[in-house]
Structure formats: C-alpha cells, structure tokens
Image (cartoon, rainbow, N blue to C red; front, side, top):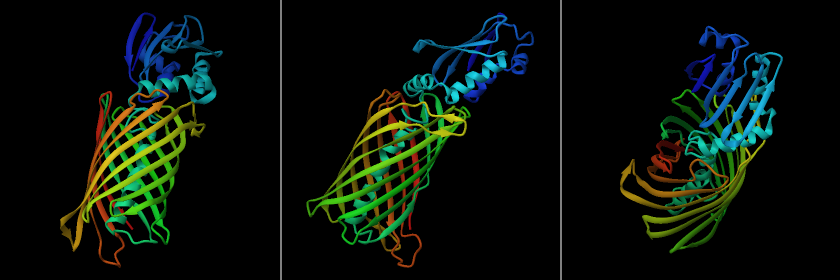
Length: 386
C-alpha cells in the first residue's frame, strides 16, 4: 500500500508485488491515477515495502528519483534522462545491482515482515530446515524399536502436507511435499538418510513464494539396551527460496547434530527426548531476475519430547501406532521477526503386513504451531512408505 501525492492531490494505491510499486511511476500509470500528471509534476510517495517504510519522490521539473529508507538512514538517487529511466535504475538496484542496499534492506525484512520467505516465521525456509531431519530420525528410531522396518533395508516415503497459517493478519496456505529416502546397513547401528522437501506458500495478499531444500544425514546407534536406545545424526542441508511477487531470492546452507534418546516404558510404549543444534547462513543465488541480498547467520536449537504407543486396535491385522510430541525451537544470531516457536504434533499409522504390497506403511498426522508475535497455524499430512 502506498500513499502517493501529485501536485497536492493524494491517493492510496495498492500493489500485488514489489515491482508494481515501482512501475507505478511509468507515465501511463501515473496518468491513469492522476489525470493532471505531467513529467514535470512533483511526486511524493510513502509506502510500506514488506513492513519497511519507504519514501520515493520526484521534484518538480526533475527526472531524478529519490529513494529513502528513514529507519536505516539510507538515501539513494537514480538519475536517468527521463523518469522512466530513473525508475528502471531503481528496479535494477532491487534486483541485485546494489548489494549494499539489499544487504541492509533484507535484514530489515526478516526483522519486520511476518511473511518473509527466507526467515523469521513458521512458513519460511529457515523454519522448515529446523524440524525436517529431527522428524525423520524419530521415525527411524520408532520403526526399529517396534520392528516396523527390517534391518539392512531401504525405503522411500512421501508425505504430502497442507498448512494454514495466520501471521499478523496475513493468511497463508502452505503446500509441502517431502521426499525421503532412508537405508540401514547390515547392522542397525548405522543408517543413511536423504530428504528433499518442496514447498509453495500462497498468501492471501496475492504473493507466491516457493522453496526446495536437500538434507543428508548419517545416523549412528550409539547405545542399545532395554533401558535406552540413543541415536546421533550429523546432518548437512542446502535450500533455496524465491518469490517474484516479493522481489527476493536466497540460498541457505549449513548443518548440525541431532540426538534422539529413547527410553522404553514397556514393549509397546516409549518416551523419546529429541535435541538438535544447527548452524545456518545465507549464500549468493540468482533466481530469475532476482539476486540474493540476504546476509544472515543463525543458530537453531530445537528440543522436544515424544511419546509413542502401540494401540490395541489394528487395521487388517496390523496394530496402530500413535505418536504425540512437543518441540520448542529457538533461533539466535541475526535478528528475526519471530525467534521462538512451539510445535504440538500427533499422528497415527500402521504397517501393511502384505509382503507383496506396494505401500508398506501408512500414516496421517496434524501439527499445530504457534510462535511469538502472534504467529500460528496448523499442518495436516498423509504419509506413505514404499
């Protein structure tokens, strides 16, 4: 939304994406909004650029565009021979030509915007990196304990997810499709895990963003006795996200260590303590016309508790297994809009006992997420293991 003033006349104008807010200063667009407009008119605009206040102006009889971010003390001038050329110079700067400007602006976005696709909210790429591997290691540990997965076996799973989040008045639909491959060696002491979630975020304000990330982990079963099973998994992750509407692109890479300690209650129930410490930072990337300006370094600490139980009910002779869990995720390092989130999850599933069946395991679940600054939502999923 922008408040635009031309020769003393003021209008409120809305924009679907970041480039539209700059393209407003094309002659035809200005003429449609202000019939008295000429190339010599004085123009002054105040706009909210993804929660960061921006001022833009053309002085009377001048083609030079002045761009200001008051909160950062930034002022840039873009001087073309025409206002059209000046506007295009600003667009080129926002697409990646002005690295210093983008570095400062993107730090403000992750601090002030509740829907930044890179970091600072539950639908961002950085948040999705936080929980993916911990959930996968939990599944591996539970399956081994309850005998749902044979030793020296490999499996492929997919778990389509749909989420609905409310983030400071913005409604977002999140579509997520994680692909996971896991393999155990001849001994159940060492395993390999690979996952690649793809995510699309559709906001009610008309903006779209997408991301993909790849994680690789090797899990080691360090302790195995009736009182304790302890898994430790180092992991590496690489992800990328971009949005034409939001005018952004970024890559995040890093890794860390995950611990899963199981304490069996009996043959049919177990309590697990799950901990993760990871380090991530952004890197340079170009997606379409947009170059990365993000310069973030963050540490993620995730701690959780999970209860798994074999139920007396069964489906086609296979017992149902339910899971209930809570996880707290803390972000530190560069300042983010939200630096603390909580996840409450529940799921139920069963193994297909037919040895010739294509699908080996079914699972459905629900996760409710709430974060500080009134960010909240839910994710439902349906999982299949092949």
